[in-house]
Length: 228
Image (cartoon, rainbow, N blue to C red):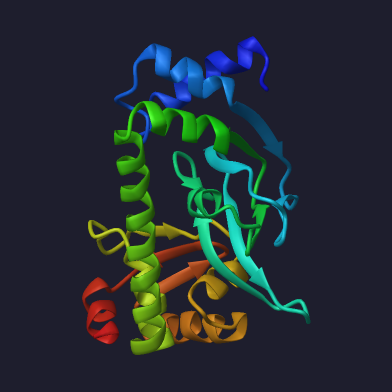
């Protein structure tokens, strides 16, 4: 349970989220009673695969990586979770242990909302369950889109699609990779070497320029044509 000063901060943050934005102060007070703040240093685990799931997490600041890790240490990044987003709801409702691991990609502050307080609020107001289902459905839709991309699109198409996520980007615009290229590669179901070759190929064709984690779009039309 959080200290009183932390509860006030939790309430202010919770009130800004779509999941809780229609709640009254009294309802937010009850949610805050089952909410604790969790500070995770960069590179540290939030939880490991097989740990019990006792609630779900909300990212206040920082970034969390959800990933599978094979027996030989190979990693497949499933999702990157940023500020204002949540994770762990589905597993919480299933009552199962975590089947992925979560690590902080940078110094991160999380709010952990316990299963007990969520279930109690759903019993009082079933509309909360509808909101949580909507959020989980959006995530499922995103994962299905990822699966379609992995199965039906080439590595180059996936990389260009990632760079052009912002539909308003123009020639000369910059895309900042939020994490290391190896993590982005895993998120796109590519090896780091393959992702580097794709970026190098796009650079050689004059479509982008890469400096560290910054990618400058030099020929947007050609990029889109190349992806098609």
